[in-house]
Length: 249
Image (tube, rainbow, N blue to C red; front, side, top):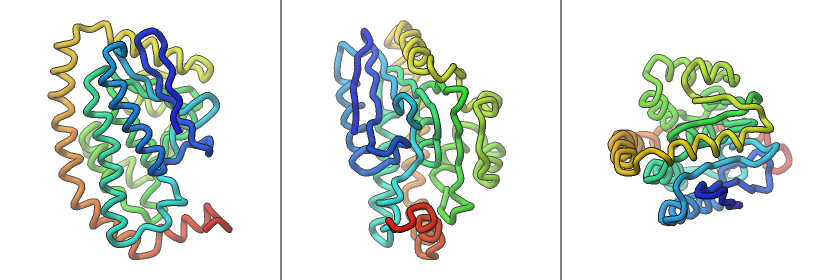
């Protein structure tokens, strides 16, 4: 599920799901968390880049083959998985950069916001489409409200529109747009730059910023479990999954 490559002192974690859009299955999530922890503990690694892979999406969000079966207590464990994944990035002490190409949808969009910086390709597309598919967006709302403010959060969550690379720069969702073929190189350069900052000031400032972020995610656990239980109980999300998965459903 994961390919790791070191470019001097920068560890690049590349998603390798069999689906080129890298949906978040439990196996992929666990692989990501393990890889992040190991890179953070490795003294030879000074910065971390997470990348969806060449000609692949960063992530299309939750894996519908797993999410389609959610109900009752399964919803609780799924929300815990999602928030644990996000916190795994926020708890990394080293500079982190997301290199985003293709789609960053739902969880993929949210996951990218956990990183210190985001370098996106000129073909990247960010979408938070949950509400129009009958899926609760309480975690996404909590994240965007913290990172980008209440009004922009409401616009993105309620409108469910695709955001181009230009719009992502306008909304400060991305720090830089790079040509698709130069995306990884540009992200590594940014990670290397952040790694040149004095370690103590960077680490302690990052911990201070991310503590508030983690607190918001933790606060959203209970409410989000209820929101998603109600959503899945209505059977509205399942209609969307059936449309997407077809016979696989």
